[in-house]
Length: 336
Ligand code: EPU
Image: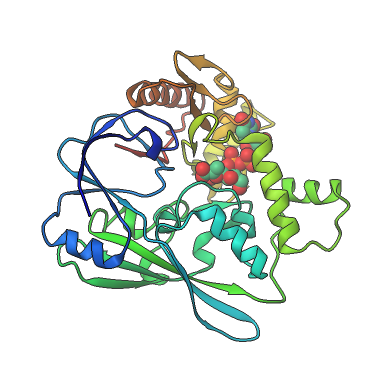
């Protein structure tokens, strides 16, 4: 294990922001991580770098990239399998591997960038499925003690793009592995999401397999979300806001076509992408960054944008949405 000096973090974040890490190390096993924690406590954890916006160099903390690989089967029966997957596995490769084995449950989460270790932190979700539905346990190492600590699904306190690791326990534990329970037959398919349905119909698939669903999700994502290897981005930059039904009704009077998803009798979720498009930002470029032309919820780096520029654009968008709709958008990516 060797600490490197002055490393550009550009290849390590999907936004492609060029910030410097004064000290940088890659860790490839739990043992290495525990050894490191004996002498280093002030850490900046880096995983797939797919949900962050770097706005400054990392001068003080040691940047640690968790590259612990490996998938193991804990137990299985006729119906289910319990898999423990180390934090450094690439998420989408893992999903494809599951589909090859005919393990169902994660197919709707195909093509999400990032590593397995960070999927619980923001409870990744897409097309009607959240990863919390399949997680049974999260393995961590406590930074203060170097000890292994396990969290049950309940203890993770999952919510919409949220978990205890983003809140009360932020910065205290390093996720080293995640255990999933997946189905081996009689898969519960989630095809309700409109775009999936349309894609399956277009291909004349009436009885879809998990592979069909994964293929449909991949096609949908490729058609509207920019590929981070081609154009820097961090997926949805903002959360979809939840507003009161009264507020929603007021907005509906003014904007009859506003889309919405009911949350409860008193709350409604509104797609931030729609709000941002209505505010006129979709496809607009501001210097080296901008708002994606096919999905307004995604901010993009055309090459040499700084994190500060992207952040300034996000503030402009927030201001405009506040003025037009009286809605306070919340940023979803981690601002560093
Ligand atoms: N919309 C617009 N204009 C846009 C974008 C969207 O009008 O530019 C409208 C669409 O027409 C649709 C609605 O907004 O009526 C929702 O759009 P979409 O289905 O694309 O989903 P989203 O709400 O924008 C969320 C997740 C995505 C996830 C998709 C599919 C959040 C913050 N984002 O986006 O997750 O892939 O649903 O389930 O919840 C991510 O978190 O990085 C991410 C990509």
